[in-house]
Image 1 (cartoon, rainbow, N blue to C red):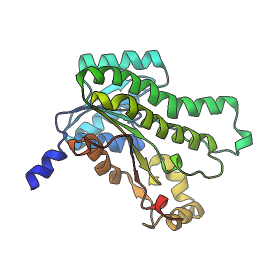
Image 2 (image 1 turned 120 degrees about the vertical axis):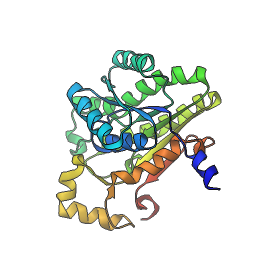
Image 3 (image 1 turned 135 degrees about the vertical axis):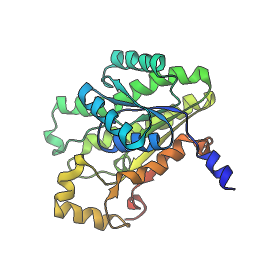
Amino acid sequence: MCRVTHQLFDISGRTALVTGSSRGIGRALAQGLLEAGCTVVVNARTETAVAAACADLTAATGGRAVPGVFDVTDSAAVAAGVARIEDEVGPLDVLVNNTGMQQRAPFTEFSDADWRRILDTNLTSAFYVAREVGRRMVPRGHGKIVNVLSVQSEVARPGIAPYSATKGGLKMLTKGMCADLAPAGIQVNGLGPGYFQTELTAALVADEEFSAWVRGRTPAGRWGTVDELVGALVFLCSPASDFVNGQVLHVDGGMLAVL
């Protein structure tokens, strides 16, 4: 029984691209895939950040972390970057669309430029990268695509309407990608984090009023730690999820389950 379970969740030897993986949740997901035996392409726009992340991840895991420096909001850069990865590293078995940003402001104070920036970063980038990787996965007849969503794919808070719109849009893009790509043997699913402690949320964690709200709103009574996302990701990238498609797996301590 243990042998069968191991085979179901075995992703060793696969090659994965994790966008926005030089820090935060993306870096934790990259580390989890490395520890599971994948070759991982670490992506961000800045060469120095990617090089440092690759060095740290390789030292921490002993795995193969390779740089993939390109701007995921630039379709030409994405096409060139994915082609380079497939030529130099190998065919991609897994894509994790993780790139994202947050910006807080009252709805009426969001500028046109801010709207376009958050839309391009959180939603358009996932479309560009998945389209390019999907073009290569389809002829091969297999592949796993995981889009990193949020509890804000389902609910909203004051001051983050554009963010919620992009994450809701990414949920529906996930379902639409499933409709188009599932016949080719590709699984497309969403991973929906709740509130997690990262360097990007440090100010919120330190804000006792906000932290108290998170603890009170989450049945688990605490913030999540990024390593707690890895098991769900491995499942969505493994043979165990071969008949799971177009779904969102929320890892949120129960937040969306209760009022």
